[in-house]
Image (cartoon, rainbow, N blue to C red):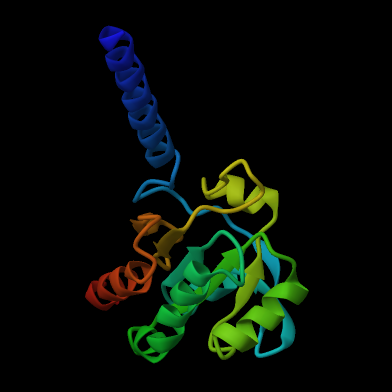
Length: 180
């Protein structure tokens, strides 16, 4: 009986470890990889827009943060962290874009209520979340932040799923350290 309990515990631990390894291995594109181009429907301050990565990169680095879905405590906290630091991102020459799988009308409401319309929010389709390697296979995106250099290369990745506030903080520190 004790051996079976130990075996069950060992198998459970192995399953947890392998899941953790698998989820972190598929969590993000690598630094130095080419960022996939995209054009997605979006919104800012209640106005519909198209968010086009190539156009944003002409202005400087782009901080692209994916989050699972709107109107959850974690997603609201993450968006607040980016909204609270948006002027510092801009001073460093960076654009910020939030992306989820939610439809634009829902993102419009969320942007106004949680982000004060301070940066664009875009609706990522399956192709976008798959190309950025943030597809969680459950119709959501993983919580992953990229800094994309004007060259179109991934310069920084932060994919700690539990550190909601750390996405803005760490991306900002990286952007401030980039050479223009």
